Amino acid sequence: YYLMRLEPFSRLALRLQGGRFDVADRLFFNIGSSWKSASEQNQQDVRELIPEFFYLPEFLENKNGFDYGVTQTGIVIDGVKLPPWAKGSPERFVRINRQALESKFVSRHLNHWVDLVFGYKQRGREAIEALNVFPHYSYEGNIDIDSLDDPILRESAIQSAQNFGQTPKCIERRPFATRTVVIPLKDRAIDFGSLPYLAPMTPPFCIVGAPHRVYLRATSSDICRVGMVGQTDPSVGDLCLVKGQIIGVGRTCVLMIRDKKYYRFGGPNNGVSVHVASTTTRHRELNKMLSIHDSMHRAPISAAKASLNGRILVTGCIDSTVRVWSYDKQSTLELKATLCGHESGYIRCIDISTTFGLIVTGCSRGRVVLWDLRSLTFLRCLRHPFKEEADKLPGARNYNPVSSVSINQKNGNIVTLVGSYLSLFDTNARMIAYKGPGREYRLYNRPTCAVSTDCPEWMEQGIVAITGHVTGDILLWGINYDTGLWRLRHVMQEKVHVCAITAMRCDGDRQDTLLVGDESGRISVCKTLQLEQLNQKELNIIVSELRMRVKQTNAVIDRRAISGDAGHNWIGYVTGAD
Image (cartoon, rainbow, N blue to C red):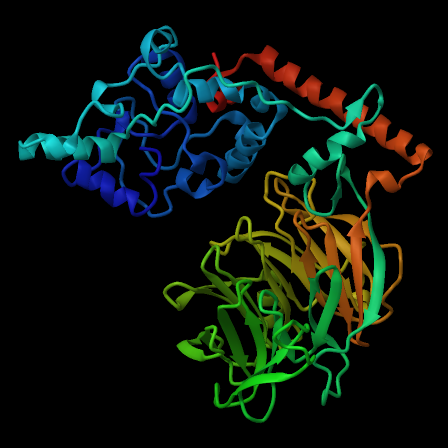
């Protein structure tokens, strides 16, 4: 019903209705009318929101161009009509819907929905009083499919379960307890005991207890010593933390974090070698060569990236080809595919997401390509308008190589650094935002490296990307998704690096740690400030800011409650509360 605009659900809907879509008036085409039908108009409408309402805006758009017909009132069914507050944007609708789901109001009332779906209001007198009764065959134990001898009845029961669902198993016969909502303020002061509970819901690089504040400072620094033997360029290529100790490797190396090893590439053998990155009980010699793999390409390898689990290696060559390899415990590399999509230029940077099945590669000619990791095929190219305009100029030469590509492991968004332009794309290659030299940075201080955090869209206060610059500056960026503009949230004050940044990595369970390496070989660990480290005067400022934000939030909730408009009553739909 909800997903009919996406494959394979479009085909499933056609098959269910005998080769054509259902009557237009019965299709999902309007959020407001669906809300009214489920909440007050139609007692038989028992549909609830599915997870896609909170993370997948594409299901609201008819990008495949299906013909869903015309309603009796003459409305042509295409994309879903959204509430006024969504301003016609599916992305904004899903983002605000997720913010509502994660809000304190929903947290306090979530137990009512659990009682209806999994608890004591699922069956019996309580279910009747709550108007929460479903067809008898949807309940667990009412129909034993294995005992049905009639093939027609058996198939009917199976089709009913597949297309209309089943009532979940009842797991509790008593009311579920109300969830405790933790806040950082207590008696006009910071409640430090609440901070560990607030940490998981704090955006990356924001201060726990004060998520509107961002402050990063260096805690340690060192010189890169791993993978530097025989390397004339002292630049850092990759970094990680092992038991709290920073490990950096040379420019022509890439880490396998889980195995505490690293690949070295770029040699005349057109292959890679595997070395020890951190000593263990099995491997006690740092930089020891464990295996060598020759002739992986027809020319020297110019870039490489290992997946987070270490089982996949992607290599890029100076001949513009990309190859995908599997790595097993016997240190064997097996070629899976050769990918050709960069017309010319050598591969400069690569990133992998096994979560989204995505590979992103960038080359010296400014071309960024997306590949499907599962099918090992070409997906699409990312279009950078500023590059296309520059390439059209008479006598134009390419001065916009790709310096960095980085994937957000929570939502699949892609950060690119092409020339001096920082851009953000979604997995469908839609540009969300881009920024070039301006007030925040000039050409003489252009970014040389960029990394994406794992900040989801609904955490609008979070840090989305971090850039390292020619002068060693480190800038932390948020984004306004409504305007498509980058917002400079923080400039690191301590000057640990004084030359171009060449490598960065976000670390920590909630991404509150930044690892940085530069072209001189210096590496550093930067951590987000904690409220416990502030003096009383600074804490008083934080408390006043938090109290002001609480007042503003309460005012917004009051305005929405007074309006009584169906477009604003989505919280009731989310919680299932009366």
